[in-house]
Length: 152
Ligand SMILES: Cc1cc2nc3c(=O)[nH]c(=O)nc-3n(C[C@H](O)[C@H](O)[C@H](O)COP(=O)(O)OP(=O)(O)OC[C@H]3O[C@@H](n4cnc5c(N)ncnc54)[C@H](O)[C@@H]3O)c2cc1C
Image (cartoon, rainbow, N blue to C red):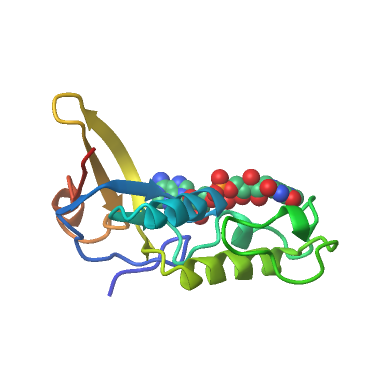
């Protein structure tokens, strides 16, 4: 069985090839907000996240860390940050909010998918991405090459 890496992820099977309107790298606040708008626009997309779950950089911070903005200014589009609008959310609240956000809007987050390379094919406007963690599976990294082709 493959060993887990620093993110708690193990080798995963090949994904794709898939034709999508857009690919988002990272399921932090930026990637999730982008996903919200892509979904509202009716576009096909995936959000590739290196960690096992959405939550951005916050799961890796120390547990007493708080946002420097109160909750009233910390909402992503479409979902108010819960609790008193004047409180300063703690790390675990931020992580919980981001994970709940992804779930509430059914955002297609693919965990344990670290993007290694992005390229643009000028002729066709194609972007190829390699997605891992594949490096401990024989030949899997090569199999993952050009796993995704995002058009437009
Ligand atoms: C103490 C502190 C307080 C803060 N307070 C506030 C605040 O009050 N209000 C505010 O707006 N901001 C605040 N910030 C800043 C805010 O947390 C960051 O700006 C925010 O995390 C940025 O979100 P992001 O989605 O751009 O990036 P991140 O949160 O860093 O998320 C990036 C995601 O992308 C993933 N990723 C990275 N590389 C790859 C790859 N190659 N392939 C796949 N996935 C990848 C990562 O695993 C991660 O999940 C604060 C930060 C700190 C440290």
